[in-house]
Each structure stands twice: as C-alpha cells, then as structure tokens.
Image (cartoon, rainbow, N blue to C red; front, side, top):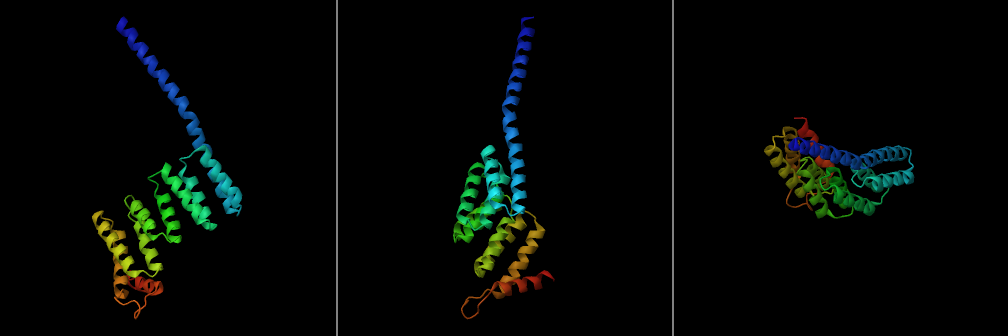
Length: 211
C-alpha cells in the first residue's frame, strides 16, 4: 500500500509539473502567433507602400517574439529596399544573434555587405549559408560576374561544381558546368587588352545552356 501511494503521488506530481509547463509555454506560443499576425500586417502595409507603418509592425513583432525569423527578414529587406543598407545589415546581424542557423538572414546580410563593399564578409556569410544550402554560393558567383571579376567567379563556380558532385546534386552540377564553360571561354590573363563584361558572359551561358 505504501508503495502504491508513493507511485500515485509521483504520478500526480508529474501531471502537476506538466500542467505548469503547459501554462508557462502558453504565453510564448501566444506571442509567436501574435508576432506572425503583425508580420502579415506589415507585409500588407508594405504592399500598399506604407513603409513607415510596415516598419512599426515588424518592430512590434520582434518585441513580442525576438526569434521571429520572418519579421527580421521582412524588416531587413524593407530597410534594404529603402536604401538603409547599414540599418539592414544591423537587422540581419541581430537576427543571426538570435537565429544563427537562418539561411535567409545570412544571405540577406551578405547581400547588403556586398553593396557596402565588404566583399570578404559577404563571401563568408554565403559560405556559411552554403553549408546548409549549396545554392547560396551561386549568388557569390553571380555577384562576381556582375562586378566583372571573372576569374573570381570562375573559382567560385568550380567550388560549386565540386560540392554539387559530392552531394549528387546534378541540377546544380549542370548549372555550374555551364557557367564554368562560359567563363573559361572569356577569362584571359590580360583583361586590359581583352576586356570582359557581364553581357558577354550571359550570352555565352545562354549558348552553353541550349546545348
């Protein structure tokens, strides 16, 4: 009897603790849900070009739930679109302090860092993102191409090809091969006497893609 009473008491204690845990989690779940509602409102205001109101809604969402990824990404992209790239970088950095695995935040920060001229930092962010999504590194290859840095772009696409082979990602491997072929036809040792521009690269890519 004594043993049975102890078991019953232990079970009651577990039930009580479970109930307390459920109560403790309710506010967090409610805040997360309310934050997503605010993000939806922000996106609606953004669609209507009410940027100032959208910023307030994104900020309110983050006040309720500091781990709301969509609020960080939305606010960062909005700041970026308005030309507030330094503020956008700060938003993405704060996002990564709460959500270090966020691929969208890494890519967003890489994008604004590239526009700020921080190519090395942008490349590092994309390298980090590529550990989860190999296609993230393709953005770096395209950015180098747009900037006219064709040898750097070629090196990136070769890295992408090696990783795509290792992960058996044939679509990405094919894309990498196309870019490598196109870049290899125009990358020369003397860019002064043989200038290369992104338009020529795009034409070459289109040719190889059709084959």
